[in-house]
Amino acid sequence: MRVSRIEGSNLILGAARTLNDLRDALGAVQSKSKSFEALVNHIGKIASNHVRNQASIAGNLVMARENGFLSDLAPIMQGAGATLSVLDNSTGKIKSVSVETFLSDSSEFQSGDLIVDVRIPMLSGNVVFRTYRSAVRPRNCHAILNSSMMIETEADGKIKSSRIVFNGVMEPDAKGSRPVRAVQTEAFLKGKSLRDAGTIASATSKLCDEIGGMLKGTAKSVSSYEGKCGDFVSVRLALVRGFFTKFAVACNADKATAEFRSASRDLVVDRGSVESKQEFPQNDADARSAVYVI
Image 1 (cartoon, rainbow, N blue to C red):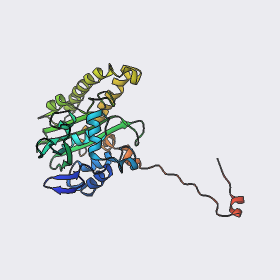
Image 2 (cartoon, rainbow, N blue to C red):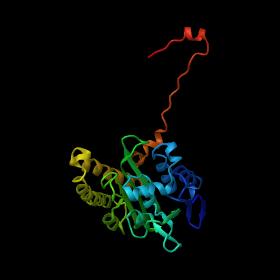
Image 3 (spheres, one colour):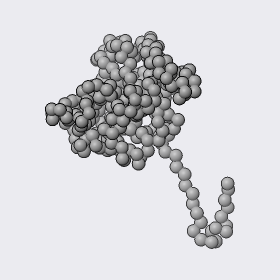
Image 4 (cartoon, one colour):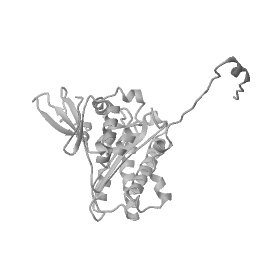
């Protein structure tokens, strides 16, 4: 339950490990996967440091599955293709369940089953992986919407496979809520290239239609939560469009101008922490001569 090791092409951590343990383990082997740097940065934005020192990987995922907790961890683990090793209570054997299947309330996970570890694949080759998050505050605050996006391309730049995951589309913190996957947009992208402006425009439109339909359905049940149904939809749809635009720019970082590349920057990471310092006089003489400006 507290293991941490690399086995084959997977980083394995015990399910009882904390979120900071997960972040440290990913950071230690960051160069081994195209996804690990983005995961490290995203996990660092979850809650606060003392919460990340207490909260376990399994605990966070179970809350997302059972209570509809608007987890920051769940969508990025799903997007990264992570799997769970689960001890089956009825057979006593270990089985592998993808995070996506686990979160979908599948019968693959039953009462009495135990999550033993999480396995995060080390992505290599022509892969681009990014995560995104928008909240009232950059840290220690629930996200309004978060996302993870991954594409794998052939040598000619055509998309071989993709995963586009959003959390915050369904009713916040309501049982049955979970991250959603934009399967229609993924199907549209297969065999196409995000180096083509027309493809980016069409994919953005299709993604907004797909996620927008889900948001409109959700808005009917959260009107009292948000105040206005339209606000719930329009704010999140703007974020969907913005996240995907950032991802498209990241996929073209070697071709885009510096002006366009700036759109994919993570401002929370780039600006660092805000610090302040106050100095007090050491003796009475200093105190009498000190000038204080308020």
